[in-house]
Length: 328
Figure 1: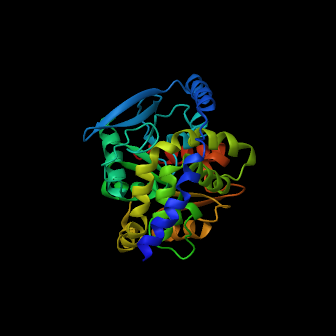
Figure 2 (figure 1 turned 45 degrees about the vertical axis):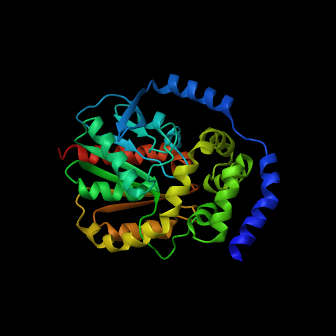
Figure 3 (figure 1 turned 90 degrees about the horizontal axis):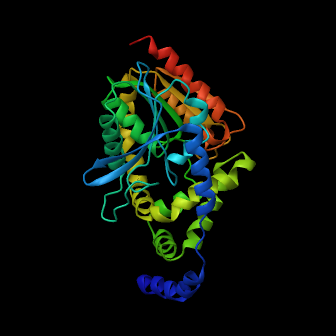
């Protein structure tokens, strides 16, 4: 009976969903890309992994200083760091990349979109650029990737920086509303997936609603939503796939938290204080898990702390690099 009811509701709404118009911002995106290229003079790389291409950008040249790898979460891409990179790139070697399924990387429909795939993407990027000293900067869903990869590769990890990330169950951890809908098993998730598969307008509308809560700086909300929104419609398989394993992944990570006390490289936990989801309580829990860590709570910054306060974040990243450089 429940299955019949679901299909009945779905059939009733199908014409409405089909009538909704597609929303994207190609012109704004193209203008931004042109200006960003002129500003940063990055080099583009396409890195093959298991028959698919990872889209990466390289800023500056490799030196004796640790290279910086900036990793995005979801539902975003490497453009999450477009405000940060120009303030960070002087004398630094920086890599940004889109995980498979996201941004301008390949988006295979039959790919297994899980957290192990994210870690394999990162490992391939590190090997491609032949990096032996890295500062990992992880945000949101890539926090788990950065935490696990850095633990397994401590000899290559000069430092780890967590920006408003999650890993395991924590008392104050709260899923963003739209993430919770797509990650909680049940009829609501089933209908949300089916509806947003059919309606670009509905998917973008829900995306915009969530983005408004992620960015504290009002003047940056609209341009940032246009830049990421331009790519968002094409990342459905990755978005649905990663959400479907999210709850189980977070629960399973609880078994691995005790080992983090043995992590040797320095850790900086830098959280936007106004994030209601991956909040200051989560930041303090990370600070307890990592004995060799420093905690920074950034005022007037939300979930996208690197967008709200790029100058301050760049300064904290450079400060860590300067501290660890003498150890090599």
